[in-house]
Each structure stands twice: as C-alpha cells, then as structure tokens.
Image 1 (cartoon, protein in one colour):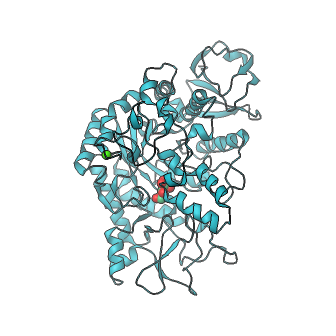
Image 2 (cartoon, protein in one colour):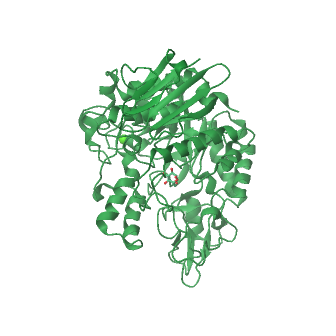
Image 3 (cartoon, rainbow, N blue to C red):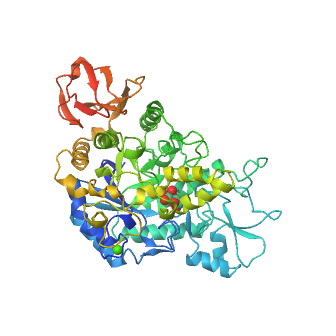
Length: 558
Ligand code: GLC
Ligand code: CA
C-alpha cells in the first residue's frame, strides 16, 4: 500500500479556468506555474491536472486528439516540463488525467479508421452496421440521445460514442489498443509525473456482441451492467498494473461510475493489483431521479439523513472492504459544494467550512477542487453562457424526448450544469477576478468582488485560512487518512458526527449540517479535551450542547 501517497492532500485544477498568464482569456500551464507558491502556501501535496493534451475541446480536454502533446492554448511540452520541475522543487506532485475510454474523433487512429475500412484502426473502435434502419443497439449516451453516431459517406454504418458524438469509444478488447494506452502512461510517468486519475475507467469493457439493453422497452436505454464494472475491465486494469503501474510509486485513482463497495474493493482494495483509490458518485447523485443528474423528478430535494446514509455507507465500507476513498464534494463535473450541500447566502462562510471539515476528517485521501478553498459558489447562467455540450444537448433532449416545457428544461439545466464549476478562479477583486486581463472564455461569477483569494489571505476568519488549518490537521495525524471511523448520533436529523481513532489517537467530529440551532448531549469525557478545529469563535463544550447553524467542532480526545 502506498501509505505516503494516500495520506496526502490533492488539489484539482481545471486548467482552462485556473489562471491566464498570456491574456488570451484562457487559463494555461504558465498560469499554473505562477500559482505554485500559492498552492504550497495552502499546503497541498499533489495536483490533479484535468486534461492538458491536444483536444478539439468538444468536451474541454476529455476528448483527446494527441496524447503526447500539449494543447497549444495551454502551452507546450516545455511548459509542462517546467511545471513538473517547478512543482518538484516545492515538493508537489502532479497527477495527470488519463482519458482512455475514448479518443476524440480527430485522433489520427479514428481518422485512419474512417479513411480506410481495411485499416487496422477500424478495430480500435466500435464500428457497427445499423439494424432495421436504426442504430446498432438502443444504448443511451451519457450526455443524452443515442450512443451511436452515423458515419458520413458510408451506408448504414455507425460508431459508438458514450459521451459526445466526437468522443469515440475505444475497443479495449483489442490488445493493440491496450498496449498503446500503456505507452501513453509510461511516456508521462517517465517525464516525471507521479500518477493518473483514470477517467470513467470502470466502463472500458462493453458486453460482447453489444446487445440491446431492455429490448422490450421503448426509447434509448442506459446500458448499465453492459458497460459498468464488467469482469474484463478488471482484467484490463490488472494488465495495465502488471505492465506499468506497479513500477511507479504514485497514485492511480479510478473514476467509478455507479460502483458498489464490493467493486471498489476489487479496483483498489489493499490486495488488489489494480488501482490505489476510487471515487464514488453517490453523494453527487443525491436528490436526482434514477436516470441521473438531469432526472428532475425528485426536484433535487435531499435530506441530511440520506446524505449521512451515503456518507457512512462508504466510510464504513472502506474499512470493511479494506480500501481507501478519494473524498470530495465538488469537481469539474458538479456544482459548487457550498451551493449544493451548504448555504451560499446567509451561511456562506460557516457552511463552506463545515463541508471542508467533512472532507478532511474523513477516512481516505481528501480532494479539493479549485475555488473550493475560498467557497466559490454556483451562478445562474443564461442559455447563451452555457459552454458545456452536456448542458446544451440535454436542454434539447429534455424538451424533445422528455417533452418538458422550455422554461422548466432551462431551470433543470441551470441547476445541474457542469458550467457552474467552470467559471474562472477568483483570485482578487480586480477586473475578471484577477484570472485574466481580458474578457475570459467564460463568464466570471460577479461575486468575485468579495469572494476571492487575496481578501481571504488577509482575513483570519476566512474559508481559505480554515482550509489551511484543515490541511495541517489532516497531514499531522495519519489517524485521519487510515484510522477507524464510528458513526455517532446516527438518528439525529441534523447532526453528522463520528469518532476517528487508532491505537494511539482519537478524535470526535460534530458537524451541524443544517441552518438551524441543534441540541444534543455531549459525552462528559469530552468537555475538557482539546478543541482542534471549529468554524465559529468561542464554541462552548458543555453537556447540553447547542450548535449554531453549520457549526463544526473537532475534539482531540487522546
Ligand atoms: C468523466 C469526466 C467528464 C467527462 C467524461 C467523459 O466523467 O470527469 O468531465 O465529460 O468523463 O470523458
Ligand atoms: Ca492563456
């Protein structure tokens, strides 16, 4: 087990919106280099860099055209080398994003496959003939609509693309595909990066024959167990481990679409010869209907009780099934944590802190997403401001296939669009939030005038300074990464509380997840112990505890 990598703090950068160094309105690698001292000051250990490879940007880098070169708007290979060496000087590791379930349709492999039906690259992808004038099967794209796209200039021929039509699924059953992926991994690991986050790695294997899912049902169907965590996906990841991963000490983290704890154990349990950590998305899907994030039938209502159930299910499973989780509450695919799970108005400061403390006090590796350390919030974007294919496409799908009135469709998208997470980083109160000197590629949240890094750096009570404290606390004691966890007050409707402990240390964590005052009885033993974290001034430890809205305390018991 890679103890030191697991016990570390990861900061996710979505480069396009992080920092623009050359005034073209787009974040870039030199921009990241300029902020390395800031990341060092924050105390992070590793950067997870969302894709920086050459890409036509249909899915902002998650559609890769050339795995061996850097997207020109982000810089060059030389810039990447500088980023690696400058990070190393500061003892910060770089994790890149391996997007290998699919390539861009502009990738030379796919272009060759289109040009020549007899090319070996044809079998790098899934080309299939249509059936009865329809797509080869009824699978739905994860971004809405059919998962198949018609090939131009060929009769009745389609290719599989589970995300945008320009993200063409690779055929991992082809050994040559797998060895190409290994080459890419080795290329970057040898260049000095320390690990990979692996994009939708648990859907790389598709059911043999690509049969219809629920053939008797009308409409496109989510392929579910025909794509998720199939036996072969484990086989292929094991092969990757044997041939490449086992030789490198860094972190390999899997994005686990709809995984179960049993699956997580196989992907990253301590005896697994696959990956080191997994992300699960159950918390992100809270309040969504069974069809996922744009299934609005539950009106995105959720309860603290459900939140606690998901939280403890996974935390306890990580012990019982002997694996570690990547703990996060936001990323580039989800709205801002404080807007979704906290309260970004009256309780912005305290609720952002409460959520951060949850991430850092959990068992596993904490991941924070750019801007989370200052409590960046969601923004209501107009249709013209949407940049993300998923938002734009699902807006159509909701209207045409789900027959939703335009106004409601718009509200559903506004609530859930990934664009919320992609507004530029708010560095200061100068124009465009200090992200750029020119109008950025995407709207800046106007609250940059008061939510920004430079204000928070000089404010002792800021979310930023609280994040620093959380990071210090987490790093100081391995009990947080590796220790046991025991839920407390499970029945309490607002209080999320637990004990963290190992042979030598013990902490109790109390988080009021609500905007109300709450009451509970504090164990007498804890009253005179050391308070190591709190998000209000002067919390009183008394037997008849009262906690203020979103109040959080962490007590060191021993
Ligand atoms: C992952 C990424 C997401 C991307 C998708 C397809 O879920 O996090 O941003 O759109 O995979 O690559
Ligand atoms: Ca730039």
